[in-house]
Amino acid sequence: MALKLYNTLTQKMETVQPHHGAPLGMYTCGPTVYDFAHLGNFRTFIFQDLLRRYLKYKKTPLLHVMNITDVDDKIINNARAAGMSIQDYMAGYSDAFFVDMERLRVKRPDIVPYATQHIPEMIELILKLRERGHTYERDGSTYFRISSFAGYGKLSHLDRSTIETEGRVDADEYSKENPRDFVLWKARKPEEPYWDSPLGPGRPGWHIECSAMSMKYLGETFDLHCGGVDLIFPHHENEIAQSEGATGFPFVRHWIHSEFLIVEGERMSKSKGNFYTLRDLLQQGYNPIAVRYLLQSVNYRRQLNFTFDGIQQSQAALQRVNDFLLRVREIPSGRPENPVFDERLAQARADFEAAMDDDLNVSGATAALFELVKDANPLLERQELGPLNRDHILDFFSGANSIFDVFQIEQRELPDAQIERLIEERAHARRERNYRRADEIRDLLARSGIILEDTKEGTRWKALN
RNA sequence: GGCGGCGUACCCAAGUGGCAAGGGAGAGGUCUGCAAAACCUUUAUGCGUCGGUUCGAAUCCGACCGCCGCCUCCA
Picture: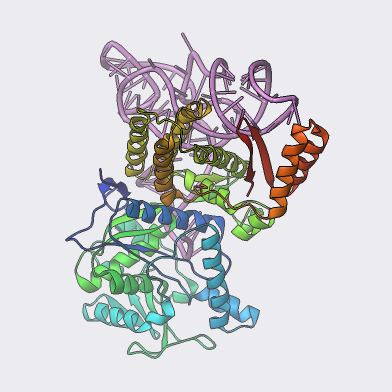
């Protein structure tokens, strides 16, 4: 079966497939690095990671490009306020961003272009638009005339006449022909970075970078373009106008937008005091893997209500799977196989993939995993699963984990030999019925995050995150 | 005002015509030296409300109530 995703442009579910044997081209709008990224940003990036990993799971060749916006008003202002060069200021947050992404196990895109390194491509694109009559100049700035592009509004499904008449006038840009015309090239201002160009000295408008960089790496028409719903209008609408205005070809086949994250039922905002970065959560002792689990657990097209209770629930759900995997790994080689279990496993795999194929229904896919856990646990209890069963289960979860990346598939190493000795000592104490000492040791280890569980086969340990 | 979405148990959340997935939390029990984990039982005759279509509706249609997003920089 093939993956189907909702397309904002056509407002329909559509199959995602490479064209003409070329790898699937996927462009995701990356961060503007003016501050630490927040949970809402990460919800979007984790969703994109999930999409990318699922395509890989399905062995679809893919080229993923994500931009970094490193020149814009906020960066310029913040850098100035911090008394830093734009370069230094932006590099700090750009690095922090990738550190956070790694903590959340979001894979780095294949290509990560920075806006400031693609100024010539942007200028070239604007010149092309100028040749084709889509632009005009005012006070040294170059604008896109939206009335020159017939398709304007097709992505956001906004009425053209409404767009053109009801826009507000930016105090900065009062001289535009139409309030909704947007800037392609901003005239140089004192104390701001600028580049010399045939358009005059200045810097690029925000939208042009995505058109220039996506088409440079993925071609004039490519497959997938993702971002948050807030980018539909005007950002992505403008990207379409710029790109198609310049090339005359369709820009993107499939537009995919993820919904917002809200916090404790309210829009996240600094003024409400419910604004969280990943760093805030880590400082409070939360596990980044549980955060990833939570942020990816709700379908990307639905608002996700982030709560602290939700992290706890995610942590507990993760623990159930990890405990299961721990027991599965303990199945010894000599034990007889369960001949019918592979059928059950095949069913779980089919359910899992059917759910993921359906617009990345993570809840459904996760349910397939938990249902298997539920069915297999009693078999483990009765020692009715053999080493082949074991390997097949681990293989299935390993496949699922290549997408979710939250489960503990491999056995961990004991942190140190001292712990090993304590476990030994406790076993000895228990044989002697010295339960006071045994409990003492168990409590001691629990305080350093090592949980002991006594089974018929002996004591097992697990490390809490 | 225009466009779009949502409302399923204590919490999170699947399900878009045929007996209401899954996870968390709670209660009781089995196992255990005690725990933990696991297992068993249990928690929505009902899916915002009221009507309608249908043999049959959480699912389709209509009205209403409530919440949210976009139309403005923003993932």
